[in-house]
Amino acid sequence: MAVTLPGLASGLDTAAIISSLMDVAAIPKTLIESKITDRNLVISNLQTLNTSLQDLAAKAKTASGTEALRSFTTSSSSDAVTVVTSDGARAFSTSIVVDAVAQRHAVVTAAASDSSFAGTFTLVGSDGEQNEVTATSAEDLVKQINLAGAGVTATIVNGGVDADGNPLSRIQLTSEDTGEASAFSLHRGTAADVDAGTSADVASETGAAIITEGSDAMIRLYAGTAAEQTITSASNAFTAVAAGVDITVTRAGAEPVTVAVTADPVAQTKTAETFVKQVADLLTRIDNGSKATVADAGGTTTLGVFTGDSTVRALRTGLANAIQYPVDGISPSTVGISVDRYGKLTFDAEKFGAAMEEDPEGTQALFSAVAARVEEVTTQYSDKYDGLLTKRITGQESEVRTLETQVERWDLRLDKRRETLERTYAALETQMALMNSQMSWLTQQIDAFNASTDS
Image (cartoon, rainbow, N blue to C red):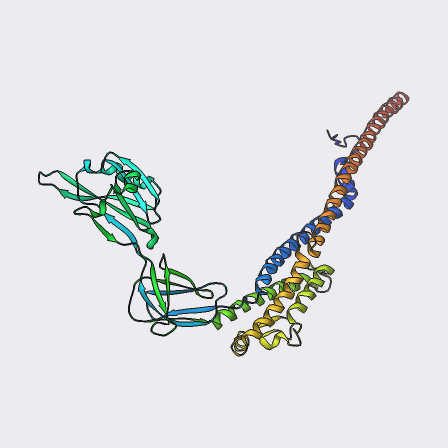
């Protein structure tokens, strides 16, 4: 526990004196703590920069692909046909005739009493697979079919009443999938009965019906020509009709439908602009963090968090070179990627769009090469193991840990220094109290002597 020294003997405010002396003694510690604060600020900004750099590296990897700028718009002359593009798509146009759309297989039983649905039934798929179920009622049969996992959904439908007013029921069965492979049949009897040919197909019973036959969707390419080609699909989606082109149909029709995939220059330009802007923003952030604010006369100049940081400066140079240096003798400025007179990276959308229209392959190649160089620089600095900026951050963190150790040691020194000062001033107060006591005794003796002499 700290010793309190009121300074009663000396008349001094010893607590204030000790506090002042401790403030002076703590100056080295305060300077170290200030360094820690500064280093932590730098580390925080470097980490934020590194995160942005890693994001840019990922974007650059995508942008360096040979199809990074491929964007397309699709069109169809009928609302019954939809066109979607995926990776590998190219400009494409053709006419198709939709002969049929995919159907689910559906069967409804004849209206019958509840007891008619009791017994053993066998559900046979289009592939011949048999699922045998045993039920006690219409509701139980529906339950057993739905639990069989045979790709068929059953439900009870009101079948009216018989001549005596007793309620009747139907069971409607529908395949979960569309296409010819979704066809099925429901037989009264066991699987052995089905194999023996002695079972009864419920769809053939009086009052029953096949509502829809499971069928594939069908389209024709080049209809009416020698190259006419029929394509079928179990669903209404046709994948890879052309490279990277999928088509979905919703209804059949005799008239040809024109479908087209065309390049989208606006989207292509926007993709390039977004990438260049991300690089420009990163360069601007580095520039702003590297500025030193010069104060007026008598003031203090404030340094930026990156001022004097050689790693960040080298990163800035590497990024700038990567995006503006020529590729095979062709400057990126020819497609609108350039640096203005203020040193700011800019993107001319109109110029880039014109370049894409005039030479799409060459412009794509130039853009991909620039993006690949950006990827190389960003990876070199932001790699989580060997990145130059990553190492810079870990170096700063190591320095902070060293400084924190120094602060801990200074805390121990200052604690001992305070104890020494408190003992010293405590001893001083004790001596002063003793001297005051002696002086008081001497004063009393002198006063007594003077009083006896006078008398």
